[in-house]
Image (cartoon, rainbow, N blue to C red):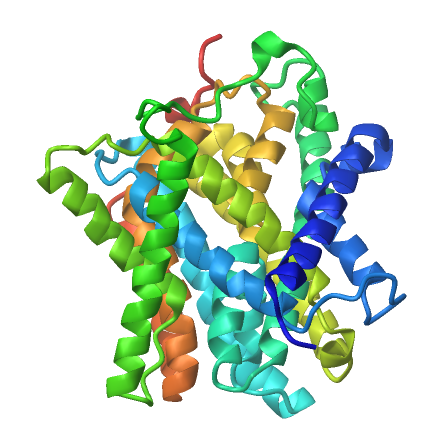
Length: 448
């Protein structure tokens, strides 16, 4: 069937309906509220169930799996315009940086090597198989889309399905495990900031009180000239367009070179950000509005990504995947219970449960779990992470870009050892500089 604008309308229309249904179910069903299951995941699972691979109620187009490539490029382009590039690292943020970097690089390195030395001989999997765990767990749906689309371009079609499956399983592990750890922390008195139950809006996903509804952005232009949302969306889409044109130019000159679209979009976005500063309009774009666009693109990306999973592509990997997910969960649990008290002292539970959330799923999941033990966010966890991210961002973005390149170049083993070495160096550095173990008196709970 030929792809037309109406085909796009059907795909986008169906996924939009499923997103609305997912949100409504979260608002009504206690089990989804208890799990804090995001609506995009519910929508994606419904899309998979109702799609041609299972019940056949919804006939997705054969291009539904490619939408994630564009949407992740939108997310990375938005990131270039909205992320904070300044700041200094204080002692709390310093330890948050070390904790996050060692965990992130360690998960990548360890599972790339396990894929090569354990899974390949035992199950006959490909060299890239092991990295699908960090792609889905600590990477999340964004990395699954980015790496999956990049590997898909060189003929590894199943990578995207495995990556999104890992991200989906990771999110469920994060939520279930987070609820268990939060209850344990509250019951044992380790959750120093816990006050009352979760807010209704966090559980149901709906903010009833209009006065409590936050703004999703500020207007930077007068609508008589151009609607602010049209301006911000136009800049992001233009950034992705320039990245795509540049990618085509590179491929025309060097056919064997393949640069992920999201990576080029990020670079072009940084250039665009610099251009605004050069013409003395550094605040021409509102970061809140850009973040809203990025969040919307992420929601659609997650839903489309899960809906496009091909169960048949997973059939030959089910035993290896089961073991991979078990080992990934064990790694994240062990890291939280060992490194949490080491890096954060007696006040580790808030930071540990936040780290658990994004180690297995995403930062947004970590924030949701953090609010279970720190409803008013008084522990300072997010402030520390925000400052630490300045030093952590190059690792996160770099691994997403370098992972598919390592597979394409055939240097997966070297990539795995290098990532592992970075994790070890960060831990050793933390001991050498006496950042850890944290003294109990430095980790006293914040005053209310």
